[in-house]
Length: 316
Image (cartoon, one colour):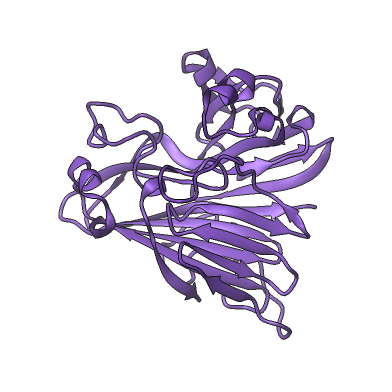
C-alpha cells in the first residue's frame, strides 16, 4: 500500500452481528449492509450509480443515463482518467476523448476485498470493500493506440456504516514515465440547489470555466448556486468540503491525497443542451463536488504507484 501523509481517520466496524452482503450481476455489483445502506457499481466505467444511507439516495442519476455501455454514465460517480476535460493536443493524452477512457471502459470486478487500500474499514461486520480493475490489456484498440502506456488501475469502493469511500490506485507497469490526471466526478443529489451551500473552499483560488477559465479567488466562505457553475479549485488546504441544505449539514466530502475539487452545475441552458440530462430541470436537484488531481499533471515513474480518493459521510 502507498504510504500517505495526512490520511483521513479510519471508520471502524463494530464486532458481531449480521454480515454485509455482496451480489454480483452480469453488469453490476451491489453491496448491502445489515442497516439497509447500499451501493451499486456498474462494471462499465466502474461507475457508482447509487449510494443509499438511512433510506435516502445520496447520488443524482439522470433518468436518461445510458447504463448499457453505449456512452459514459450521466450521474453517479464516473471515474476520470488519464485526462480531465478535453486533453491538450500537444500532450501525450492529446488523442484521447474528453475525460479519458476509464469511464467508458469495462472494468473487471475483482471481488470482495480485505485490502488496506484507503481508510474505511474493510471486511468488518458493517463495512465491505469491492475492488474493480482496469489495465492496458482491457482497453479498446482505439484507446491503446491513443495512449500506449502500460498501467494498472484498482478502484476500491468501500461501503461503511458511516459513509462511502472511493479510492483509485494507479500503477505504472511499463518502462517509461507517464503523466496523468484523475477525478471522481461525483453527482450529489440535493432537494433544492438554490438552497444548497458548499463550505470549505474559502480563500482558495480557482479557474472559472464560465468566465473563460479566468483565475479567481473564493472570497466568500460559502458557495451558493444561482446560475451555471464550473470551477476548478486548486491546491486546497482544508481536507473537507461540506454540502449543506437549508443551512443543515447534509454531506462531508473528505479528500485523501488529492488537492483539487471541481464544483459544477449546468443550470438551465446547458442542461437542456445535453441529450442524456433528464429531466431538463434536474439541475435543481444536483450539484457536482468532484475531488481530483487536475491542476497540471501527475508524473508516475516506472514501477511507482499513486493513490487518491475520497470519503463521503452523510449527516442525514
